[in-house]
Image (cartoon, rainbow, N blue to C red; front, side, top):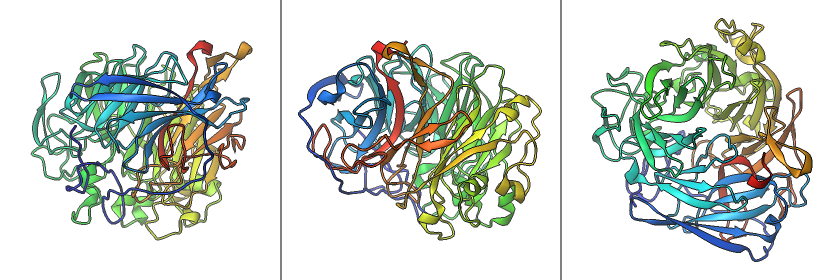
Length: 581
């Protein structure tokens, strides 16, 4: 199985999207942790032979504590910090009243490949959904049947031979029919022209380069369609740098993805041309830091029509900041969509820019995007020092609650462009009340266009309001990168149903090892959300070894053995099928 690397041509075993102020690096963390001996697990293995000829395996290591009545689970997609040990999905008991609340009751180890760089799964899980888990460095997607939770069964693998026009699978959206859309951040397997499923052709500069693509997969992860993300006519060459240079420049490096089946809309945000991003050998890094959001009409699910490519605007901080990399528009990591059909808008957030943007209608040819919130305001609410701003703060997970009331956002912590200590910049998760903004329909007034608004929130009455900003202290080189909403509610008889009123969210503290703000402390933490939008850490969600709040992945022992620390990235709330209505 071919692998590829970013920034280190001599290391084909890992593709590292590692953002550092000095350059793109591939780095592995070794560590130690405390653990107690686990009882002997029940082991079962499922297999799948991929189109690349490789037989992939997934082995459950189910502890006795995983048995009994149906429960709620936190699935965590984790990579081993030891490159000689397997990556795995950890199944954590997330049932509030369970005696094993917070315990890792199963680990599903993958083989034969190692160092996949376990990355994202889908944003939300619904009853009957398959689980899609991406290996960023291995250019591979693993698909699991979840009906026997807390056990998982491997039912499909999409390997590098299945997506010749794209590399580095990132995010997933599962549709009601069980198929999924996936973003592929990087360019084609080999440089040159690549032909997509609809017959269109785009020139690419190779693996982890440009342009990325969208892939539609069936419920077993097999490719239905490779969908071009780049405009056929090319894009602004000054804005869209490519290395090596392409005859038609493109900023198409899709990272986050959101789909509204009711509106037949798909939105993806462009991140970076990862292979060379922030390399000290390249003079113009800013042109590799994407500022764009793409919108498709998905009426034809297998051949979506690209409706628009929009550049996010800079805000008031840009006028005071010489370094373009920290301007509000830079590195658009995540989009988010409201859920109600009558809401036609979309949100987007920038990782290095530290801002949130909104367009009231993304179904039109030229959506009108404006900045509606600056992370600097949330820092003030969280009690940060006055000189800490959103510049380079590594904003990440972004989600709208199912009732369209709240917008959730995690921030890893300022990338310290000014050399501020990590305990000063800190990570956080914050909540915005967005009801007034959405209620404004096609004519919102909110626009962050003064430095005072960047620090204190928008003057207009329909601007998002901070209901909670919780600091997450992590003095490693990382912080809270990803998150998940608990979209389930327990009802009579120990059963569950889906709910629109979110009462809990969780965060994971890991991005990518060796990046400027990425490795993190490897904890998964739980937070209760009150009816008024206030967050409070759930201190009952404790590590079974340390007894401290949050589940610590820096440990020695797991149900599958003494393989040492691991790095949790994607997280997802799920419920046993037998008790989910």
